[in-house]
Amino acid sequence: MAELPHILIVDDEAPARARLRTLLADIADDFPHRIVGEAGDGLAALELLTKVSADIALVDIRMPRMDGIELAQQLAGLPQPPAVVFVTAYDEFALKAFELAAADYLMKPMRAARLLEALKKARRLAPADTLLQALAPAGRMRLRVVERGNVLLLPVADILYLRAEQKYVTARTALREFLLEESLAHLETEFAPRFVRIHRNCLVAIDAVVGVVRESDKAGDSDPHWALCLRDVPEHLPVSRRQWPEVKAQLGF
Amino acid sequence: MSITAIPPALRLPDFRNLGVWLRVLLVANGFLLAAALAGNRSLALLPREVGELAALVEPALLLTLALLFVLAPALQRLPPRLAGLLIVMLAVATTAGIGGLLAQVLGGENSWRAPLAAGVLAFGTLLWFDLAARAHAPALAEARLAALTARIRPHFLFNSLNAVLGVIRDDPRRAETTLEELAELFRALMQDNRELVPLSDEIALARKYLEIEHLRLGERLQVKWDVSDCPPDVLAPPLLLQPLIENAVYHGIEPATTPGEIRVLLAVKGERVRIEIDNPWLGEGDHRKGAGNHMALANLRERLLLFYDLEAGLDSSVSDGRYRVRIDLPGKRKARHG
Image (cartoon, rainbow over all chains, first blue to last red; front, side, top):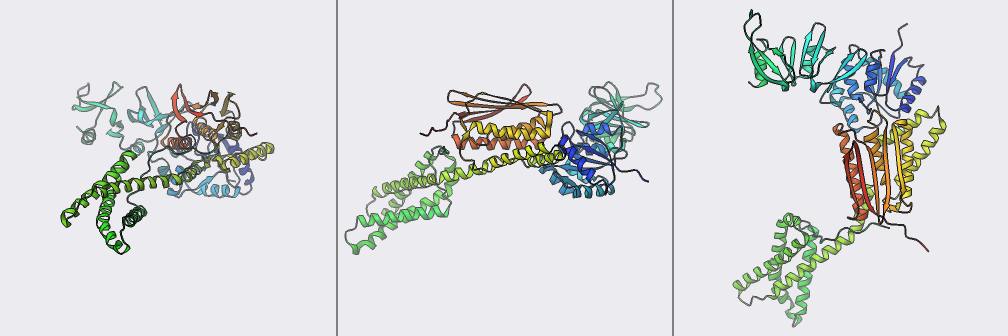
């Protein structure tokens, strides 16, 4: 027998979580499931998801620390993202987005039948990119970093450069490096105007560039090449010959 | 106690309004007929005399109205009294101008009486428009007040109902009390809210509201009341406290990660009532949250203006990590009967 769908409840109000539990219990015969956890905000949900897996997340929109919209953005970056069903009381801004993207959402208070319908649909549908686009036109502002079971959120604006190294991508900020679980190509398209590709394995934040230098390898076995100097970090980042015209144009040299 | 009058200022009519034109033409022509009748020597001569007067008055009148039509936007920007004076002078000048022209073309005396009469007529007409506008003003103010009376956020209503549904099976008694409080809150909201009410009623209403929010938010919401210096019979506009406290919950408690405290201070000093409500300041947050707050405050400010004219003040500030709204009202008391 196939495993029951795992459901995660994310809402900052205890009675609202209780209500969802009650309704889920009521529809258990029609929709057998297992509640794998409850979280009081988006960040807590992300932390929970490092320990358990979920197929469907019922997500409130207005929450402290990380709201439902950002949670959905972060979930979309997971290798196996749960389907997100938004549950909202009333938020003109969000409702407009739902209508634009023609996506399903639940209005508090809701009936059991309506929840059942949304859950059945959620199993078939992946979370729609168009909806996230409509809810947060600016896209993600923070990247998810998991360190020793803790979830950190790295503001995209703090990143000076991103470098691909074997399995991982390293994000360098003025303070230190962070390991990301996302591909460089994906990050490049998502944050297109902010970063420029200077090398096969490196993206640089355009506003962090403070200068260029011409340098050659210490061994002197290759031709001299251009390298970028960035604020707050000592290292110079080599620009590949292939990317140089593009970099020059982007930086306005 | 009802709404005080709007600040006194001369109200000018809209000179681009057809109704205004019609009234001006009626008044001026009635005046013309009356003047002709008063100076009439024999009834047989009346048509001729009216015709002579009309030859002067009608062009001057139409010229004045046409100029006012053109100048209307500029006049609106001037201080009303100055604009009124200019209008009177305009009427005098056009009449004198047309009179001089007629005297040159047709011959005959150029009298100073016609321009003077035109000035008096213009002055009288402006006064009449002003009185008419004043007579309609209270109705307008009451309608505006009714429209402005704070509405509860739909967000609050639906979240509260959801919270009641959330506890109804495990804690029916709690659900019962919350529904009763919700009913009372809505009864107060739907009342005729154009009269001042005792501050004690406002406090009771705000406490009911906070009880409901407490069910949803639990320990996250903490409230400190300081009403010891506030006599309960001081009057205040209805629905003054609750919307401010709702704002404080929405902006200062709901988005916060740690429990927060809302402080409400009511004090009467001499003839003034001071109300202060403050909540943790969480920064600007995202753009869509800020707008609602400004709306709520602008709304309240306008209601205070309608109730107290310029005698009440409202300001908001951020200091020491807290957002604070201060209101200052004249401390009116309930009139004692008997």
